[in-house]
Length: 330
Ligand code: P6P
Image 1 (tube, protein in one colour):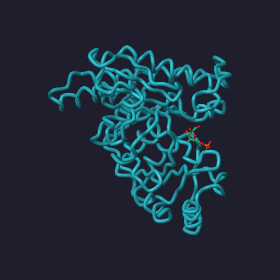
Image 2 (image 1 turned 180 degrees about the horizontal axis):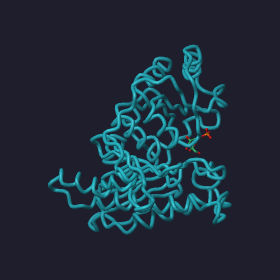
Image 3 (image 1 turned 60 degrees about the vertical axis):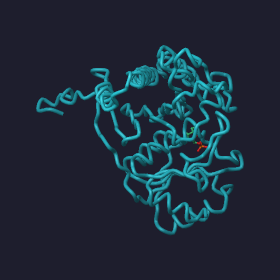
Image 4 (image 1 turned 180 degrees about the vertical axis):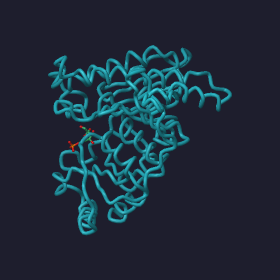
């Protein structure tokens, strides 16, 4: 805030940041910047609809189930449509893939251009919207391989190949967190000027924090190692925070430290969270901020995806806290 208390003292926007990063890559064509710009535009539009969802009576079930077998929320469909429209107009995109759609959408094939694939969960945690809970858009950007015919095979790349990843958290403020492989940056939407403004560059997650984040209601069905870890955490005076909305839980951990766990359960023996467009983007954010992320005992970013919507068990957060979980898993 400047002396007058105005919030327009800081005008370094996401757009300025991405364009300044572009100058670091001499061969850059601007295609990548255009994609981030499209995600930023979609984030602003989704933030607007989320804020007015109750007034516009678009909360609750759509009356259909998505490919995940989960009841589709009306806001899921609205957010998905906004992202498809904003990204679909970008000539550099070959494939779009969404949690809400069974198959990837092929925008351009091989010679038609399309250097990138964008995958997203349009509104993760949307079922908490009815109670005014925080929700988020999670995204990841991969390079397209025009030689691969199958769109699903094209996007099934290990997380280490992500060229950018992040999330937009729709809470009391709208936060845009992104990494392009050289650190994690935090932007906040200034609704007065309609721009995401840089508020923290090179975020670092505290290496330790005695807070774990898990849905303990399912703990009796966790594999033994996870149950042993929880017993250890209880004995070492850990506290617990669990919002049940991945972006909100991850954002708290990115800022304060701690560890998030979604182990295998009876209803989700492979874990509940999706590898390609939930676990991988969050894992890249964690590693780029000095944290860790594992699926079982394998680094999340090393897991080779087989299917677009495959699920994985997930532990991520402060490096020392993830190591404490690993000691009980191995
Ligand atoms: P549970 C939301 O439905 C979500 O996909 C993630 O945002 C969140 O981390 C998880 O599921 C919560 O699952 O089983 O604890 O309600």
